[in-house]
Length: 388
Image (cartoon, rainbow, N blue to C red):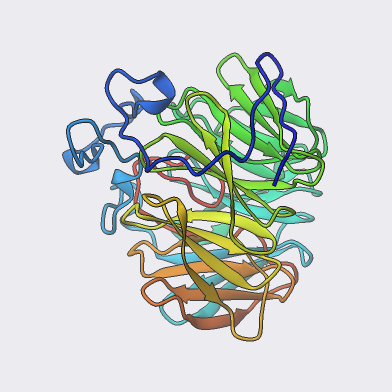
């Protein structure tokens, strides 16, 4: 496959090169986007939450996400699964032990994702068309009063916890807001259409975001804020979820129209190659042992399992009779993968040990970015649960 790639402020990129070697370790002397940083100054890391060293020069940015490594902040929270039903304008709350809906409430129009706050104390329902964020108290699972916020398709948080980053999809901009009051502080207009998902570099200095309607990726310095690079994947692309590899060297980007994931070098931002997974590749989730990436293929009712070490698909889990697996998260113990069934009004629960669907739970219409909570981690970077 050949695709034209361009960068603003840099040289042209060569796409779809031969398969690169196995992931490299991030050495102390590497460029900053490959070096795992210490937690933000306001975070008090415990010894068990420190970056896991597999060798002198190797790091794992998800080392604090292992089973049982719950922050003291969330240890009293009841384990629940929050499902925003985009077409119904509601949220269903599921008990993961019984697989039953234990609470149902109305929110603003077109709720897209349920997002844990940076400090882990609040869940935010992104009411895209309703121009509001509905807070949920995860101690009780009950909603609070909506906060007016324009165009909140998705929500992330800066690694230092100072900013909420609202992905204003229809406005084509990134809005920096106060992470508690959600007061607008600054806005960054973007050279692309439909910003929706992203992830941060290992040291937290760079945010790589996808723009689905124009087939672009933008590399952002969120502190300035400013656009560092603009990568055009081609008019046939529709990039979606973004996830950084455990060693911090590669961004994986799902492409719903190309039916797979792009691998982008986290130091140079060059597109390394394309990896086919399945029709409608959409959501990306890391296993609790940091060895595998789960890719939800919304258009064919399957989940592709990608080995981070091999950088290839090593297994495919299929939904009996088909389905539309979309967004979700991994259970705290790592044994279940919860995904919304976008076009089928259900939630799928996969057993990560054998890939079988153990439950299909009816919910409202158009379920989208469900959130499994609480999960291990010291702080949240947003979306349906990116923890470090």
